[in-house]
Every structure is written in C-alpha cells, then in structure tokens.
Length: 193
Image (cartoon, rainbow, N blue to C red; front, side):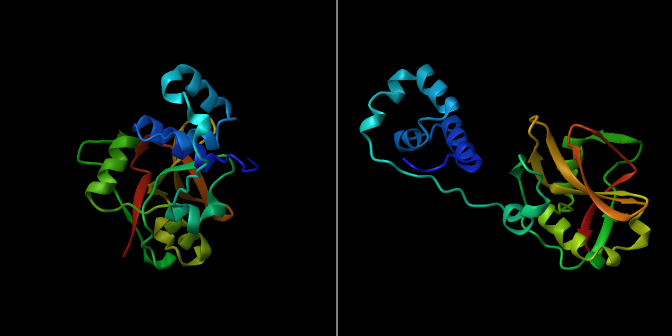
C-alpha cells in the first residue's frame, strides 16, 4: 500500500465508525493498524469481503489551530474542539470573569459553557497572535491566568486541556491546564476589544 497511517486518519476512521459512517474502503486503507484489526475481529460480518473493494483515502480538513498555530500544539496532542481566530492584536486582549455571584470556582465544563454563552471564546490560533507580540499585552492582565477556552486539546494520556497565558518572571508564557480542573477568580476568559 505504501501509504502511512497517521493520527488524523485514525481520528477520522474511529469518529466515522462511532457515527455509523465507517466504509469498507477506509477500513482497507488502514487494515494493518491494530485498532482497525481488533474492530474487524469484533465485527466480522461488517468486515467480510472488504478485501475486494478499491482503495480509498480519507482527507480531514485541518482545524484553525492546526493551520495557524501548529507549533503551539505539543507533540502527540490532538485538537478535539476549535474556533476560528478573531484576535487582531495582543493589545486588544481583554479579560472577562466567568464566575457568578456567590461562586468561588466552577468546573471546566461550566467555564467553557459560559465562554460560549457570553461569546468570549478565543482559541489557540488567537493565542498565537497574542504570543507573537507579548509586549503589547496589558500589564493589568498579569495577575490572571488568561484562558483560551475555544480550543480543546487531548493529551497523550487522554486528558482534555485548554491553552492559557500566564505571567511569570520571564514574562508571558503558554501553558495547558486540564478542563477537569477547578477554575477560580484567578482565571479569566479573554476576548478582543
């Protein structure tokens, strides 16, 4: 076959399988992968006769973060959810709280839901814009962990994470925190002014 099975293709294969859109051509293309072989062994009727079908490939469209901020995605991590970039300049960053009256912290899922609700949902491609000119980020934002909740990444251990900007002795730096963490008043969502 000569074609290499990559992470993007596997993602497509198993996403389509879960959605019931898995085709024989796609199985044949990746037939030598252990996960695909295990699936075929568990579903012999569906896998039957696939060797006679023509070879086909699956092309997955890259997310905005994969296209515009690939260098910020750690090796072995995959983009699970993403948003289109909107930030024009690091000087446009504005911090927005997401806690409601009486709350001291919320779950990551609640934080992300509120980000979508109040339309403060920048992603990793926006973080790349901010990182390109960190000197323009307002000093007023330094006390906060700036959360770019629009992009969710899956780490090699299966955990879901979001990218953040934190202030330290050497200035602004990128970090990743698990969505499952508790998010407090020290964390802020960000948007462009």
